[in-house]
Amino acid sequence: MGNNRKMKTIIQCSILCALLAASIVISVSIGSADLSAWDSLKIILGFSDSGEVYNTIIWKVRLPRVILSGLVGAGLALSGATFQSLFQNPLADPHILGVSSGAALGATIAMVFGVTSVQFMGIGLIGLSAFAGAAITTLLVYGIARTGSRVSTTHIVLAGTAISSMLSAVISIIMIFNQDQVNKIYFWTLGSFSGTSWVKVAFMGAFVVLCGTGLLMHSRDLDALSTGEETAASLGVDTIRTKKLLIIMVSLLVAACVSVSGIIGFAGLIIPHILRMLTGSSHRKLLPFSALGGAIFMIICDAGARTAASPAELPVGAVTALFGGPYFIFLLYRNKKKVY
Amino acid sequence: MNIINIRGLNWKPGTGHILKELSTEFRAGVFYGIIGPNGSGKTSLLRHIMRILEPDKQVLQLNGTDIRSLKRKTLGREMSWVPQNTSIDVNFTAFEIVLMGRAPYLKPFQGESAGDLNIVREAMELTNSWSLREKAFYTLSGGEAQRVITARAIAQDTPVIILDEPVSHLDIRHQKELMETMKVLNKDRGKTILAVLHDLNLAAQYCDELLLLHKGKIFAQGTPKKVLTCENLSEVYGIEFHRLTHPTTKGLYLIPK
View 1 (cartoon, rainbow over the protein chains, first blue to last red):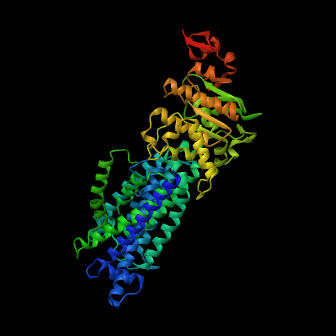
View 2 (cartoon, helix red, strand yellow):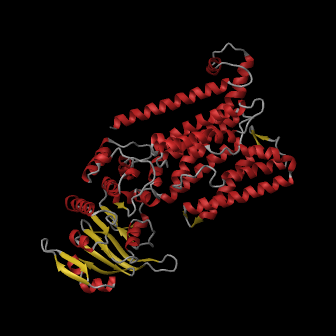
View 3 (cartoon, rainbow over the protein chains, first blue to last red):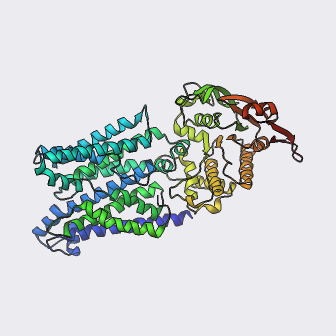
């Protein structure tokens, strides 16, 4: 039995890895400059004969964007999977604690004060300001929900939702008084991967690797927590400390995602559900599989966002919902069982 | 030897006073039944012993050590828990649920050894749930789920097993099976069992010793014969009882008047 299980996991994992590789190569090859997938692959692997221009397009423009979208997809899916288990709530998504609204407010303030041209280590001030906004919001929500050293999951979700609505209201008001910036702010909140650099990729990559490893380290604790907090405690999980650590790690990860790409909804909600249906709820599978699935999904969605209405670019957040929604509903309908 | 010592346990959530200066002790290897009316503090007592609720310093000792100074993981190797509500919505197989019982013995990233898997298998066989191993837990019936959760507690292999109204949702056959399993664990493996029970006859039949709780205090503690007197019961439950001798087992048999 054990071997069968292991075999199945290895096959599923290989399929996801192959899909990820394919989605990277294909989405790198599509765009206004015509390139075949094969040529793109050769350029990526470094033995191309397509010339300097194509090299530049792939290495300077498309590849960082594709990789960044994959990393953000992975980060959001990891965050969603963790929050759903931690809060035992199938509707939990990465934005539930108001982190994203905090980031949006940070970005909005940066845009309104016109500091958009300033760069710090290759990351725009909008991104940094968004990151700061996200971090401050997390601390705020955590502080409100805390009683002594304990944090009730119900309180933190409610506090997050309340803070999130308040911050959105502040953003609306700022937009009313700065009508010239409305477009920019609005599109930022819809999410986009345009203007990607390798620095952003490195920044995001560091967060995905560090937080991803940290979450995976707690996969057994998450299994126990997803069956109930008291049960987890009886199974030897230090629930107070573990919850705190997980919330910190996920908040950092979401803050990083939002600061490089804006607010992209849906991926963090549905990808973990889809993978739970395929692999079950055991986190040592669910977390890495969600990361892979989220990466694939986001890469495909971003490819759609930049090509579907070319030369205009669609907001990637709209594509994730349009594209992912029907598929999720189909799965839900077919499975007709509890998916969470 | 006393495995658990409680001295002056108080619990006042909000305005109520659920546990009042409760003191008692539990000896290793004894099958304890905790009885009493609703709201008498049975579950609150268990939750403090499990340290799901935090007792004051030096009030609750496990093997002579203040429970507050013990790590969660250590507690997970000392006490296992069969909760009242066994429903789990998440998509785990029964096998995965029982495997969680090994968690207190494993480090992060450490896989389960063949030994762990054997313990899981044995626990599931003992509760007659091995055939359910591949099934999704949420599809199981109440009785099946209870067996799987019990197997998890057995797989945890702790000296103390704590059960919170384990049989209230079960039909009469499953009630008997669960109590028999606990008796086997108690007699053959020397486990200390603490079970909150509502059925006085079940408590009289299986437990070595009973704690009768009333208004947050221990009203009586001792053998079923000593505790289950008509005076005690009418005082605590507020109704009169017939106390009979069971025609075949010669044990106690109680029915309300």
